[in-house]
Length: 209
Image 1 (cartoon, one colour):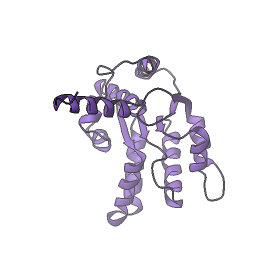
Image 2 (cartoon, one colour; image 1 turned 90 degrees about the vertical axis):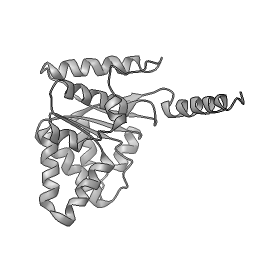
Image 3 (spheres, one colour; image 1 turned 135 degrees about the vertical axis):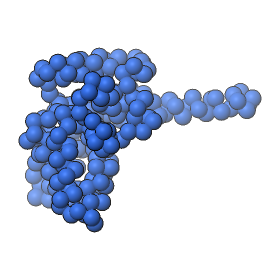
Image 4 (cartoon, helix red, strand yellow; image 1 turned 30 degrees about the horizontal axis):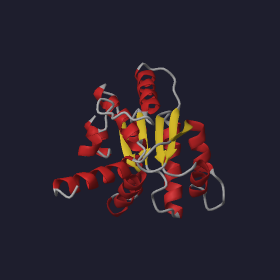
């Protein structure tokens, strides 16, 4: 289990992203219910689709995905949650020391996990290398028949264009569509709300308001 946790974005914020710590709003109750149902089906061994979750920044996509992964850890199931940008960075770093062997080691670790979360797809800088590498990653997860959750700030059409290969073929996007059910998360941004609250508290503490 420690190997999979080491690959994940495990920091203080990640560890607090659990269903137990879920802060309910008028917008996210259905998302919570979905997360609980997804975990229950997955943990009971029932067939379930992966998820492609899009929406504006700060609406809870990453929290949801990390809460699912933390639920897997709580039940001793293997899972990895990592941002696409960090994953590509890890693979690129192996070139200096291990070359292709290092790349395959990372991809094989993803294949070993029962559930993989690729967070913030679309934030990474698009290059021919990143496009080809992402296809390798998605194809490896698919061929291992593992479940995938993807979060992105992009719309479905934007993501399709972002993932286009240099020959104009949407291989990666088409594979994701085969593996994941698309859903859109809507609501007020937690980040914007947090800034407003911090601003109010700041001036209150200074006795200005």
